[in-house]
Image (cartoon, rainbow, N blue to C red):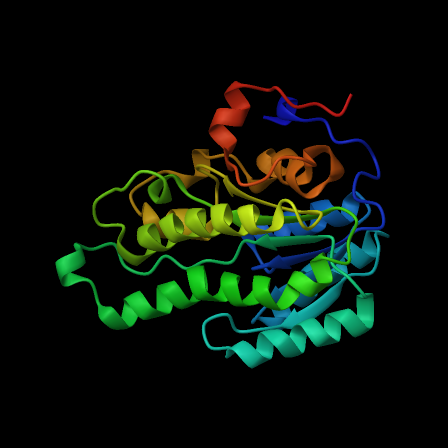
Length: 258
């Protein structure tokens, strides 16, 4: 998978990138990887102690000092996102990247039996929160000469599958959001907007979705980091409104920084 794209050293030097769900799994790995390549990373989540672990790892490795912003995506009202953007603007002045990684699974059940309470919770975290965060941060992204927004997609949000309920519907909606936002921003800003389906990766959400599966045999999040580096870095400039797939990109390694 690392043959997909070979990122040059310092690829993200000087860039400021916000990552949601940065406390574990793909989000934590992405945050540390972005820092390794020179980015100042803003770690967003609701679990302070877990975020502090990632913060310490980045700082101890000698990378640019990260920042932590506590935000409960399941409960925060719109004004909290605006307040966060105000703080970030005062501290950093702009954003060069935004990775929407945080998500919850909810329940796997037929739609006719799906809990409406659970439906609302999943949609809040997986769809409403990314929209609210993006809206609040757009003014910061517009200040960048080359900004990238990446939404985390999923194969069940590109081809419907039984029992995936709010998670599947929410991921379908994310793909629509990507296309609409990309079309709105393409000709008037330097912001590109894409989605990336990371595919089967060893994460807690994957284990929850497939309790009978052997998650230990799956690739670690590190294996797909070249894709995130490509999309958050300057080499993907000009690519917007696209639905990327880690598995498809692995079988067609057509992008290179060389």
